[in-house]
Image (cartoon, rainbow, N blue to C red; front, side):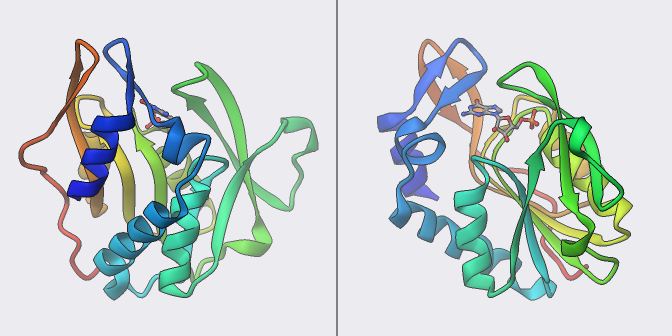
Length: 200
Ligand code: 5GP
């Protein structure tokens, strides 16, 4: 997705060797036109998988996930980051280690909104070590639903998440794949190894 790469090159801010800030269009201010293009790309890639729900985690996953669900005409459900005190029997929940905040979050989804009949597409803004996606997969398993694909806006292919998802044989499609970050620059991957988005 050339236009996303261009946007990352012109507006992304590299912090050290492992964090990319894209606050001007994805993580703080949100560009709705870009989100619509992103949603259309994901929808086109995954449409044949009979998806019934799109799943993400608040808050930065919501914008791309919403546009994807809009194109697929299925509901979006986002996992909430809640304090464990207010969790109850009505929710599926798990613990996720936050890469950027370096702390653990309890995430939860109401049992009302995900069930064993669901075929779920996970969408998130970034893929680093795969903890956020792993947390959502854990919840999908609790609900006895099926994870049929993972769509990531920006993946850092040099971290563990990419291989983690491939090892689970879940189709992974990333719109921008970063090979490494060096001297304040973003170097994109030349060829992406992605799990095939075939019929599941
Ligand atoms: P993971 O769970 O894969 O280790 O990390 C993914 C989550 O951490 C994403 O949902 C995203 O919010 C956040 N994250 C990880 N790496 C970055 C990054 O380089 N930049 C930003 N803005 N967020 C990141």
